[in-house]
Amino acid sequence: MITGLALAPMLLATAAIANTSYEPAPGEFVLRHELVVPAPPCAVWDAFTTAEGWMSWAVPFATIDFRLGGRIETSYDPAARPGDDANIISRILAFVPGRMMAFQAERPPPGFPHPELLEDLFSVVEITPHGEDESLVALSGVGYTDSPGHLELRAFFERGNAWTLERLVERFANGPVDWTALQPPGGKPVADDTQILD
Image 1: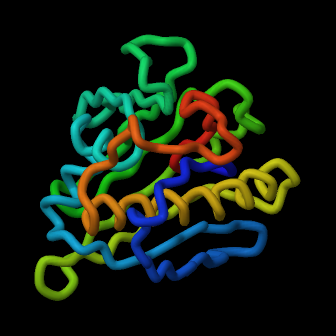
Image 2 (image 1 turned 60 degrees about the horizontal axis):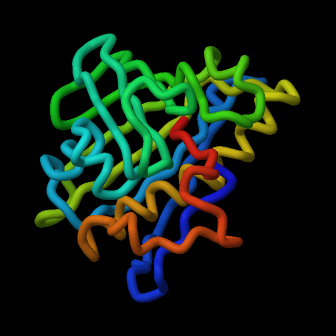
């Protein structure tokens, strides 16, 4: 997730993201970010597990077959259709309703670095009640090693996952994203973004 869509300054929300990454064993690394989202767990759960939810904050196109082994198909191209070759596809590995979802990217967007290494990695989203009508959200990338390719991907997602979680906060602080009003950095069209969660 090196590149990101820039929202108009008035839409930006301040999100205190904690990088709680850790090494479970020598040569292994879990990339982890946490932050408080101003929404109850049920709303955050819907944001990750429904097409409408994804399109309200993360991407302008999404389809989801939410079940064990189901697929999440997304695109940063507002004109994308199901089955397009450039769509991002992830597989749902496990979930605890309302609290946790694990998924693995199977097909990244064109131009993604080291696509052959995605089979080593998977993502876990954890949602915990926090205060009144708030949720603590943790996004972990699991499976990283100290190999050169994994180090490059880790740096890629360290920035990208933080950016993604900031967009989630903005969605609940300011309402759903109006994809037609976005101004990508450098004037690039939305379809040129190369971000996936992992």
